Image (tube, rainbow, N blue to C red; front, side):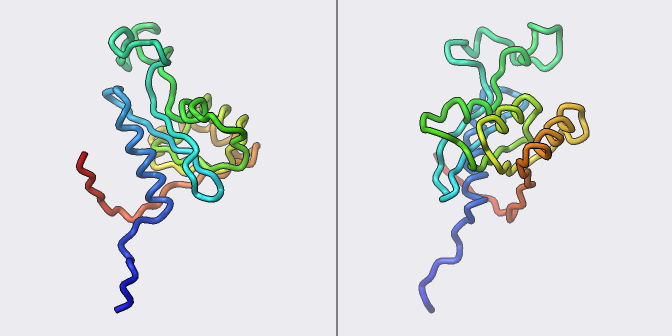
Length: 161
């Protein structure tokens, strides 16, 4: 027996796990989206999750999905992808990769393209076919951003905190 470990997780499993764990910080009762930005040499550069902007209390804004305009979360929530971009305090994000638990909306796609992220690995594409989703994919295709569905092993990892 060589003693070499074979039970470790892959980089994709690791970074998607970080994105999903980050999403668990969100107080959104319906959709907890997390994102993790990674350098070409597999270093985590930034993370984010969906929530309200700094200084906007979770108790003072609505989390509802249905209702009239200001009665819903939509005008107020910052998505996990944008938070990961805004949380980055380094230099350029040119050529980096983003792992995200939900395929980016068209607004996040614009920010991803503008900051130079070149690859998006996504876990879920539950809004596939919607106008926003089609717009994201069209912009990614035009800008040369590769989007790859996550294909994990299905392994469950238990973390006790």
